[in-house]
Length: 180
Image 1 (cartoon, rainbow, N blue to C red):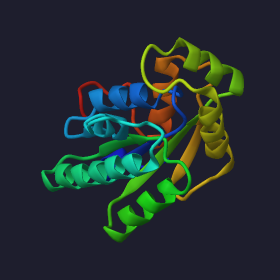
Image 2: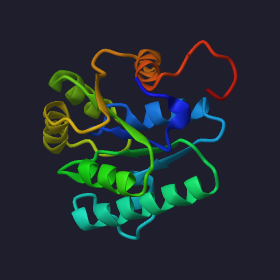
Image 3: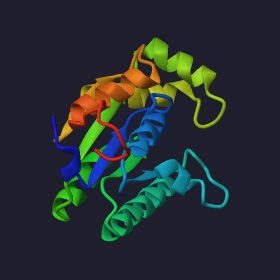
């Protein structure tokens, strides 16, 4: 468990469809001075987005990190950073945060293959391809990083997932108001 009030950043990691964006938005609802950055939203600002182009992803991730620094400079805390964080990108971002002395914690969301497949089929927007998502989901389940907790989101509704995240982050869900 960590102290939410001491964090500069919360990283939400996982395959498409696991609930990162929904969880990020719900966490932000309770944070008085927080901010939310979704790397896919930054990426969508590019002309002619090619979702398979890793260079575009790296550009958007770099922009997201710059935006996070700007929010922190303005006193926003914690900043929630949402992305898939595949292929060592999480380790890179965590090491950058450590170098910059930004306190951070990572919540990695995982689903059973059947739940992942169902959620991708039910998505009305966003990435819906199963095989790349399966690979990302498997990577999340098998690779642990410092300051990270894996949350099995299989079968959890939005409220139950939020309660699990609160427990990991040391947030009291019964506390009234918009600030922990």
